[in-house]
Length: 181
Image (tube, helix red, strand yellow):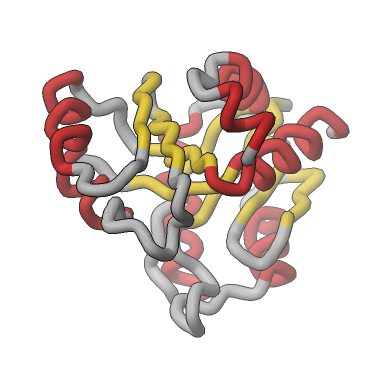
């Protein structure tokens, strides 16, 4: 069995795309996953699966959630080993230690090319800092995410891929949950 971390994009935000975590956990169990646990109400999951391929799990979970729970949303899935590497490769360690709530990791469906990351960097109008590493974009929002013009929409359009973000506190908690399994 492979341990996975699954992230849903844009659920339970401002009353939109409502999905109950108990229903979400039950969905995964019905699909053959085990040890399913959730963190917070924003679609953060840790689970075990016989299928080690994250991309296949993403597609299967997206389709099942759409059919059984209603909202159509993206799933981003990483293995526990992927997650360990995401944490170890964090290029913004100082920010992670000093101000983890303002460091966000955007987990992307596909790795963006260098030219797309550079185009995004040029589009930044504020004090935000970005670093790209594989299918992750590490972002520091020194003035807070809510005030920033560096929105998910802008990021996805510039990079040509979809994703979902978690602040470093949440990413750390999910990593710890995966290690407990």
